[in-house]
Image (cartoon, rainbow, N blue to C red; front, side, top):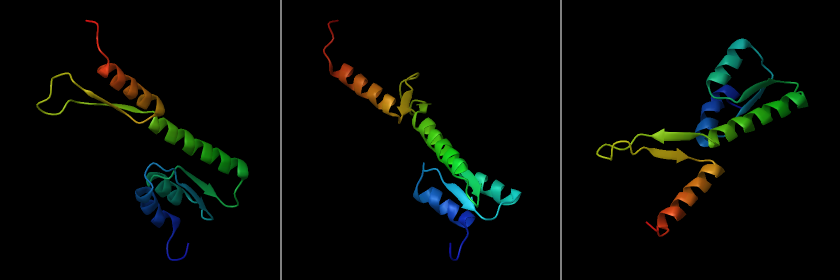
Length: 113
């Protein structure tokens, strides 16, 4: 990359594409660069020449990490002044979206009680 290194570009890539796994590919493979890349949020750090199996493994790992993040569920405490014990469930996965749809549909249904 003319004018900057991949390590210099990494924070901008992470900011511009949050949640996207960044796989660093470099001709320079030393411990300090590897540590900087991983601490900077790189999903993996691969040295040239690239072994296709290593690249495939890095991509699969990055996809698994993203999928795990999407499947995560957070429980957020109720806002101040809210009902005690009324936590809010937050999730971004397909499964959680289906759960929220079911809750919404059930909430609108007439109850026999």
